[in-house]
Length: 206
Image (cartoon, rainbow, N blue to C red):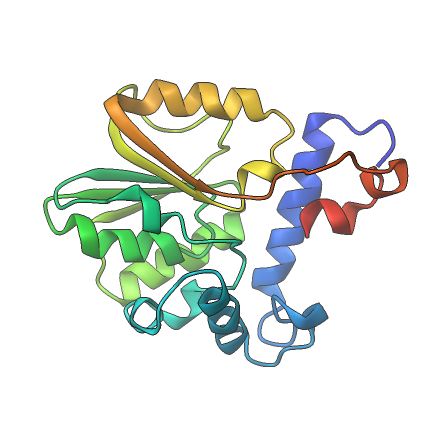
């Protein structure tokens, strides 16, 4: 990954997540891609990071690809009637959970830059009659969301993939209402990476 610019890094991430969707069911999202049942694999991972069986039973099976690293909804305190934004919404797992909390008077917006992920999320919404969820194609550094429009922002293991994290936080500040909340589950560095690690595309997306 020598001398890659921000656009190159985004393309690497986009291609990696496109493959997760388009290679189903032969290539799973865990166990080195050996799982034959992506939904089951996603459930195993989700149980280990704070989601309940009730959570997984409440949403479309192929919305949970096991790509998270925690459960931001545990600290988001999502309430009925609120507008929720999910940064990097994937196939829609967290959005569908949030949609049940905000109810018919609320709205959940999912933003993802991978068209194939977005297509699967939209199909999930249509096929399962979710009317309060809106999936939008876009980058978390340039959110397709109006100023002061959102009560709660959630994100699950996505901001670490951005090459410009300060821009992400600037955007979250722009779209949040006064007193809005930000709930993030993500990966943080406890020590510096070696040069070999920095050049490893699989590690960057993994």
